[in-house]
Length: 352
Ligand code: SF4
Image (cartoon, rainbow, N blue to C red; front, side, top):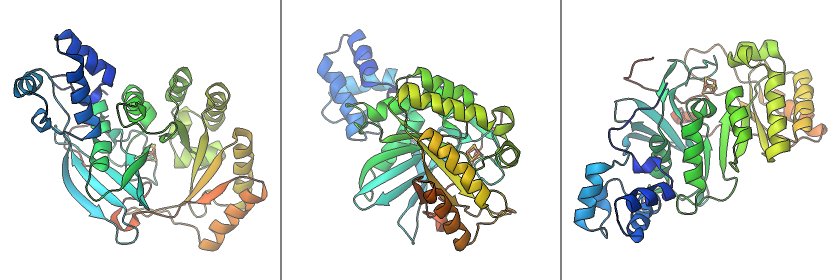
């Protein structure tokens, strides 16, 4: 399931040193690639024509040989409750993805998609309702973050979470390279561990991450503490059961010191008992993980419900009693369907 391949190499999908090497191979002075890289990642240039201090002849040469991904902003919705912004972005093949930006004071976090749709079909999540259409390219992942970073109404973009539509680790190469661009001092220059990769427990991807040297944070969407419940809520668990996923996270913690956050969506009557809170506490203790509790966010025609406030607080208290850092992540942007599990792929591409 490969990403759309552009006819011309996409500079937005390249690390700065790869762009340097391309320019060197064309016999261009090194400061020219420095200029182009700055335009792409520090000024948000959407085409070579935007690069006004680059000679026109070089801009034409670049346009002849290279491309720059330019996602179209089709719609922007702003939450009245908390100023969360959701962008509907059009890709060059007509498919669409959603990106969410969560403001916090003068800072903001962008929640980026890595696939059009999702193959794993969790019944509580809108993103997998239409299955997987395709992977996003590096440039398509990076340009979502650029849309957020250079939007006039968005404050300083300090954090990126690869947690939107899709399973980031199932599109590993593109996710890892985009992450390197976010962290690169000539890219987005985000601080170490300002990028979080989220996973539903895709074991082959966790194994690749263990072989890699990415200084990222990992968020595991666990949502259940036993295989029977998790099989119902997250079908991926049938292939990669809890114990193997937790073992892989433990390996990452020991070998790479990758900090782990467990995301746990609370769904009434499915995973919100005190017994489950105790089991979750045990898991968090063994992995030195903190936990974000996410009261379930409504999606249309769903049979699920969020637990009552009292039950949510009791669940949190049980975790805290065991010494686990447990936070309740209140819905952000729920009034514009921008909260966890609410993003939806709109695609005109066919499922493969
Ligand atoms: S929760 Fe994650 S893995 Fe499950 S369908 Fe949604 S995007 Fe896919």
